[in-house]
Image (cartoon, rainbow, N blue to C red; front, side):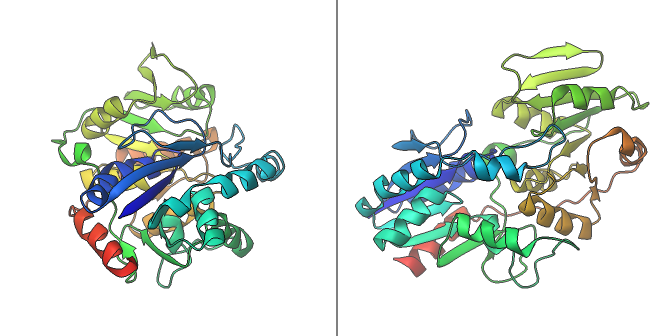
Length: 329
């Protein structure tokens, strides 16, 4: 049996799940990796057989998605060509972690494709939802990576096709501790913007910022700025006081697993993160509309009295793979 495991490379969440699940699929079949999206140095299970440019989501300096640029600056003709050339016919099954080229190619070629991403269950029954959201955007999200069969991840098992978060082995192996260091991972915000806000916070904490703006690490007063590094990020999240992060599913799930306080700043107009924030807020986690000087008091309040959500998610990656293969092959 041959499986094509296709991964969207925007952010690290899709890639981190594949680190855990792809080896499990490899115990049952021959697995090839395909990726699309922005270049990402996050390690994959094995070298992809193909990387496509795919779609790019453009963001503003304030952290919101710029839908005008996203809609008009992507190359749809190249996307269509990539769909036609995608080698899905060489495989018995395609697993798509929100990777659109393989998903559309599978529909056009009649190849079985299973969606495996938290985006797949956003509109499911019982899943917490924001008070306001665009049903049109939600429809676009579903059309972006279509599939007739799929499973999603969430913080709680809201319904039967929802799986527990995939927690990487290197996170599970952490012996968590607590320092006076606050970790910041807000990839859509500029470094200058983040630093200007930190300097206005009166509490004397150490700050570590992870960014993709720089390839080198440097220090300011009480502020450490680091390029994205999986090894260093894993070390820091295990020992930090708390984390200020966007609403991405993998980072927030790992913080929950480790029992780390979170202050979550979902990306504006990023509907998946808005849904994640709605679920986290229901659990008592503090949510900020934006990371700005307007919310200094809220940041201080969080530092002094954070809410902690701790769920010891079991390692059920083998069961997930068996379930998918049993019902789809």
